[in-house]
Image (tube, rainbow, N blue to C red; front, top):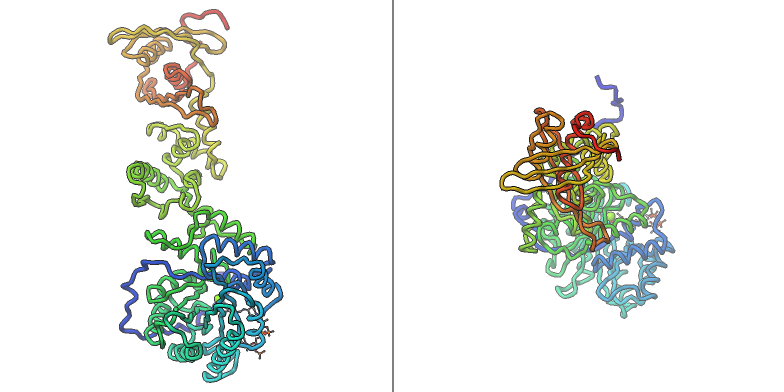
Length: 579
Ligand SMILES: CC(=O)SCCNC(=O)CCNC(=O)[C@H](O)C(C)(C)COP(=O)(O)OP(=O)(O)OC[C@H]1O[C@@H](n2cnc3c(N)ncnc32)[C@H](O)[C@@H]1OP(=O)(O)O
Ligand SMILES: CC(C)C(=O)C(=O)O
Ligand SMILES: [Mg+2]
């Protein structure tokens, strides 16, 4: 039996929403093929939901970001609500901070003093949208306003008249009007059309000078398909559709704010209101970053530019004092990070193919498993993509070493190396940085205990039979190795084998040049050699770096022998003078 108290957790307290009856829905077959008209409500809806509303400098910083990102319509506040909101609108106008192609918008209730104050705030604006709202749902009508349908309609009509009349007194501004039947989604659809039509009949829009009808999911109450049905229905039944911009304003109470807005656009909406990264009342407004990037990821210009996502995040965080979740779609710190081995492996392989494809065709379509878009588009780097912890695999570890240190481990060495990193991650129960991975690599393969180093070597090349004589230093003692074979390594391995009296077979070998250190363009680059030996049937891998590739190869062989635990001094036949 559950030990969790049941008393208050009672689903019978709630009622299911009623879907609207619509037999001719067309929106499910539509696709979004162009960006909607965007309007940011960060400075109003976002601001009114903050623990501490933004101060003027924060508002200005966010306004500048919104302009830079590309918004052409920005709701800058509720100027009748507070002095800071009023003053901010004045500052924008008086200091000429509004670019010519940007229209500011202000929100007001349908109350004369508030409308009057809003127009005062907007005095001198070149163009502006006055956004009037009143609530229309049954709960609001019956419980909050305690008014009938007709009385609520009268509030809207009266508000629309005041807006029209005040606008006539300030002809220097190019006015646009917007009406929101607030709590639209919980309003009877026939009544929503009736009240919008009443407002439209006062504002008398034309196709050249449209009115914005904004249909908010003030509190998200249903699955997004129901919202789409509502939007399609309104579009079919509202008067003067050709003179109306249908705008959507969704909230995220059920976690579907973006989905509802997307389906609403498929259902015929023209315009979207929302905030950057979704700040707003309760669970927030619909997140314009996510919706715009969803459009972008379909190969469509979203008309907003998020290529400097870090600026968007830091500005929004500074202004709202709310942290962006690390898993936030497109923006979160971890959304392009892969910790798990199979994801890393797939990303690694796909990115290698993408790089080749892109070298031939820079416009090639992005097809990388687990990465819906290229992180570079948002100013992120591949370094942030593959991160190592105990869930990671060899591909990810190899990727990090190659990206950060130029070490291109052959596959057989990746297999050998991965458990060392895994062990470290498990012991420390944490992410493993690329510097730590490089240290583990160095300690494991480049610097085994009982280090033995090549002092010098002499090679006598003969057809099919090379002779290699080398002096190695072990424990401050010089040891001579003399062997013959097909090639340098074969000769060296056979000499070593004779010295330690153990069968050694060279299983694998790879080498490559390492990239020059940063800022050291003229320096000769080091080479790295990787070997895998079988010593009495047991396999040992090792590597070595040197400016001389033969030296690197011989040293790698020595390192592998040292890793097997052999003490070369015990086997030396000729001990030369101590060094
Ligand atoms: C869903 C949304 O986001 S809507 C936007 C909400 N935003 C805000 O509320 C932030 C800004 N608002 C405010 O700061 C304040 O509400 C103010 C300053 C504008 C007004 O404050 P107050 O006059 O003290 O009124 P308060 O908001 O408490 O009360 C609302 C009154 O206005 C009426 N009212 C509320 N909304 C509207 C409206 N859209 N149109 C007409 N009347 C309205 C209410 O019925 C209530 O009337 P009552 O006093 O007769 O009961
Ligand atoms: C004022 C309106 C549009 C609003 O913010 C809402 O309904 O959520
Ligand atoms: Mg809202």
